[in-house]
Image (cartoon, rainbow, N blue to C red):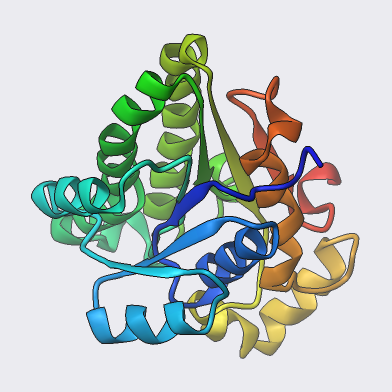
Length: 244
């Protein structure tokens, strides 16, 4: 019963596809009322209609005023999953400042804005769960992923800062660190025969992860089963980061 999310509202940012949608579906299956988020109202509404008990919450997570208005409209948010993210594979010396800033806004600043909006309500109620979708790149680096790794490393430390400030209010803030998963963000890598060969040799599981394989991790961190787990990064990578 400790994994039951009945009666709880969970906002999952960037949840119209890929990992975000898989996380939203897992939370809904555990009983949560899930708020599907994205920037396009029509897409959000269509996706929400396909998830049991879901509601539509279309807003831009990098827009401070839009975030505040959307959170107020949702009412009490018991679980926040900061999933919105983007990637850009480009050498650091070729990276434009605007590209760097966009990655920071989408991957890191958005998590701060949405968490800051929901935290006062959680503090008032004396309970809440924040799950930040980080990455194995929060701790590891690869050529051409420097900016992405910097944002995800920042998100890991933001998670720990949330723990340090909010734990005394009954809030648990943790992160999930996916490895390489089959999503639209990794389509180019999936189509690359050389990279696929490297991945199959490098990952002990010998394969890509599937988005729904992150469901158990998010339900655990969103439920009372994790009430004494705080400031941690739960790595889900098929063993990638465990071996040399």
